[in-house]
Image 1 (cartoon, rainbow, N blue to C red):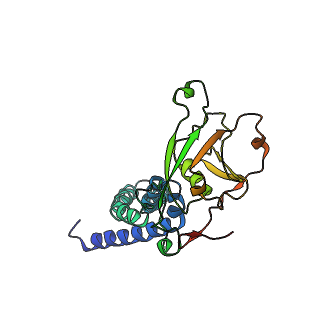
Image 2: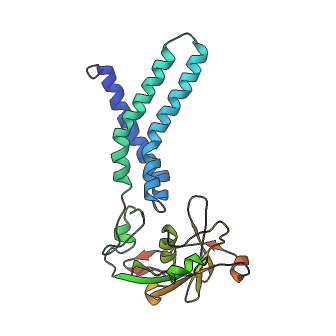
Image 3: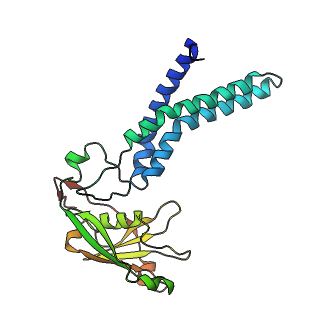
Length: 255
């Protein structure tokens, strides 16, 4: 097979197609998922091309099997499709890793799978911003949870980060427990209040009051997450999607 020119041509075309499909998947899906979960983004991007090739092989197998029930060709074609899908992984794994690289903000900043978008270093968040420690505490959700109260956590942010950035980082972590009946948690700073709520695949962050993108974290080095219990006034408050404020040249733009 290695010495067969036709087989080598098929392998070369499969690798080129896998690279192209991986690039498209990274642009359309991977970069959006990477802002929430880098591992999931890489997995989806890596498997996009092999999944398409395998699905195509299965469809052809079913059609050929119905048209030629006694022929050996359909099983052989399906085996070839499986081998091509496995070969595609040779191109999709390094391509996805190259296209979906995580970056670190400031000195040792934890971005929790944040993707560095093209041109962000020049026109986006400043990579030379001074590091900033935010001290977090949270409520206890049950009697057993009181043992470790007040549940302190230190978040490494930067001087240009806002409450919106802090909330996104907390939501991406496992710091806030979400019992089965949980409505969510609120974090308040200045005149802004954000809520972190459970979701099907990831936790959702929304604004309950004010503009969390305009409240700098550097002005609030100590924050508290409050568990929204039944009867809280926030349960009926209208929530709007969180909008992180853009940063240019180390200074956040005025909204």
